[in-house]
Length: 491
Image (cartoon, rainbow, N blue to C red):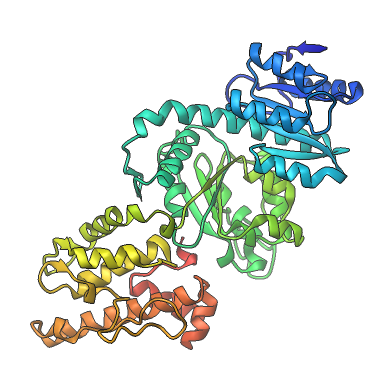
């Protein structure tokens, strides 16, 4: 038995989609729940068609255009897993959300691994949870469709903004980024330190209708906890000790543009609540004020931690996670796209050779082999630092293995911790230079190698790297910046 319902025209309630409303297929053998879901989705402006089991749903999919199917896991005749397998094979553009009783969560997780977008446990925690999940699934469907249209144009793309690479992993990043750029959807960028999360956010902004307006970036982990709300939302005079003047926050600064929140997982709980309201309602309040201000800001967030784990630990709000995770872009570590290393290496060679008093034209095959075999724990940022270091030491216009910061000593010794080989200074590289220039280059090369190695060993954690260096955090950051290195605080 099927029931096809058309959405009402006019306001869409809590759902704000940029094109036509999504079409949702509700599949459940319980009539009461099926009707209840249909009414809920209709009230939020969606088109709805229903089926009482998987077999009927398969027939509907042959005739109806559907964006999202919300499917009960346990049904007679054709169950949810069998229907999921059919959808993935015959209708790959349809996103599937599974519904399951609490006791079948393990099976639902297997369904997600098999290609379902997400799962909901019954009874639902709230109507908003259901609507938000389906809205996000529909948005993902639209973005995938848009990316497919762009696929031929992007087939040979080697660059998007300042992102460089032609590997399959980077082509996927380009497809998602180009697809989401023209929209106002919130984006969550995932990836290890040094993979280019801010570059991705900037590229999305530059290819969006907001490109003429501000791109504002902030590292959430670098803001003192007691100043986070003031930094993001502003404050009025006298709101707290030291608030001698009224000051707008970053949301107001980015009004009409894009706000990039790096390391968003480090936001304190109260700031998470206010961020959620800003995303839901487009409204903020300055600290110490009761005045509500409307802002039009596209938020792009990034993290190198597992937000799922943070949610389980009670350190990150689940509802905020779903608001941020409308579109997720995962940046691959450099070790998983080694075919991009030559392209990246020559890109950085051109960048730093233009600044060098000595012409540097090429990377020798032996040096390239070293680059391609390195594990790159610091990812693209580490590669950039390595090429800059090599340009400083290069003597004859061709970079050799000995001029790389992690090149093996002639004895073949490696770092005692089992990591990359220890860097060494090649003194003969300086004998043709005046003393002052040779000294400056040697100091710069030492600082670049020293601070890069500390940051690498500390996993990008500035505070830990500063402790190991015997410096305070601010002095370490200044010294690292002087050496040409970026820390998390700069991303």
